[in-house]
Image (cartoon, rainbow over all chains, first blue to last red; front, side):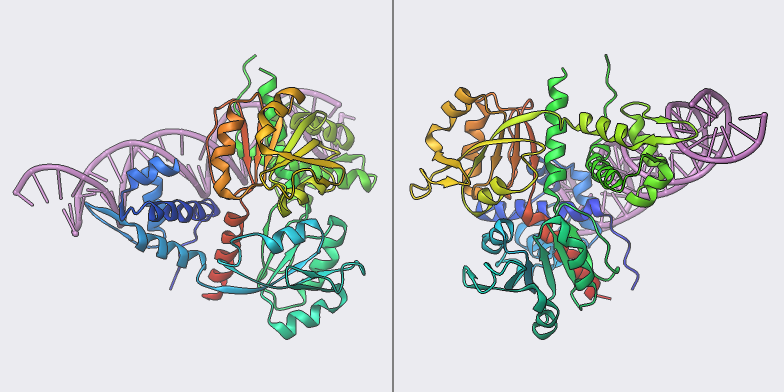
Length: 211
Length: 211
DNA sequence: TAGATTGTTAATCGATTAACAATC
DNA sequence: TAGATTGTTAATCGATTAACAATC
């Protein structure tokens, strides 16, 4: 079946709906209209209806959307019912922070181990997770059917890591290093570039000061 | 003077230009055309010229852009010549990782202290930075002319923190907690929502699997 | 000067918003 | 049934791309 191409703008709003629907459920709200969702999310009611109708008609004319149903549908669309076997590459401060981040376990991520080049870190445990030698990573991925790799290395190491990951059957890379890279198209890459984000904040502040 | 409103899409591409220009400088490249920049960045040459001309005519017809000059202009636009006195709120794993993150010192961020509620953390040092009691934060911000606050607390604490920050003269908030909030408009907010980002990766992977 | 490439206007494309028929 | 709100088509708006005159 032909699936209409859905834009990244739409996809990036889905987690927002997910989050606000949790809030509504916690408040015991059972039904919600696109107009009410608009007030909560800041998106227009029209946009919300358009977004949701990319995936199906989840509402009922006259009464709106059933909160719990809509939440489940969006969770499904986002694949949050799945669990992906995951490794973290780079066991420094950031890698450790991601390993311990609350909530990831609940959604999608099943973190199995960390990898590093530093002999001082290799062999350590980070909250019950082993830090393993980066040189063993290819075999580890194959033997343990790892599906997601999280890159928390310095940027100098990224190209080498990308080269290694490309040869595995990994499905996705979550990249925290402030550098772009390419891998073959069937590996999905999502980057969180802290430096870029900081620069945008810096821009906004310095603009404000010019007034 | 009236400054034409520049869209966030343009702003979020500026750090990419910044980063690729560093790469060119490291390779000793002196001049670059929009066509060459297009090959490197993946943006179209037309878009690159449009983007840059929002801020001024930095190129020369016939020969292109002088790499070092363009780099300096973009650094200026992003406010990277400034240094902002900064605190980190929340001294857990993520707060500590941000405090130690390489490269922030070089650009814009002058981190002065961390704050936490946890008595076990208060009084500690994180890489020569004091962890202070969250209850002293308003006075600290005022006394030290703090300009940026980085939120690394659990999401439950965010609304309270936002309420406090709103009453200060802070200029910007860099928010790492996975929750949205509003403050008055002259405080700029940039959020890095790790959960949202993970969900997008999860979406992309689960879509791929449906083929 | 001829060739190249910018700066900028015009055309196209895509995303958002508005409108309204369908229907609960 | 009357009122409300969705699902969806049409209109608008904004962003990207194309085209080309200006100019180095």
